[in-house]
Length: 262
Ligand SMILES: [Zn+2]
Image (tube, rainbow, N blue to C red; front, side, top):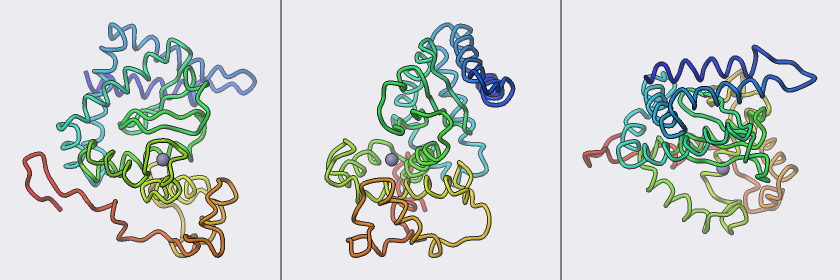
């Protein structure tokens, strides 16, 4: 069933994004919503559909050659992440009844439209179920996919969320630590790189550039587009640049069985 789920999503994505792409009226988006709705019906409702998508997601994450944290993916799934994903997909798929769409990104599903039209803001991380306001905003999708990679590197969602909230000093976008949250800066960096066509949506590098060479441009982008003034010249973060030894990128330390993994 998992392969079928992936195939249906892939078809839905094709129809939604390319196959019926009429510019005057957004039939493409409607086509996707209709296909997702049909998939939910065929699966016997949102719960059945979410079970298929959760299984397809895990399968896809485990065979994705770009996933360098497969043990983390598996560990996260086994320690409760699978249940959280299931809930996220149930919500996202239910959204198709309200015109919502779903796009498949190698085991990550980006849900847009429907309820999301009423959400003021870019995107939200819900494990492998991600929610973005604007379906075409691939920078925001790259941002959320980067959070998935951080989580997979961490290998345990509860621990990841605990560390994230600690960095953030709260859960909202105006929490005192949000501007300096290393997980967020890292995800914003992916968003910036995608917006400037330096990576694909999965974070794979395109073209010739170095983290050092784009650092200043990134900092300007942060304070011109967002109120992150600490990245301005003279601010606390005015020398920030992405480090290869970024601590949240390499901290998957415990397997499902408690052994240290590196
Ligand atoms: Zn974020």
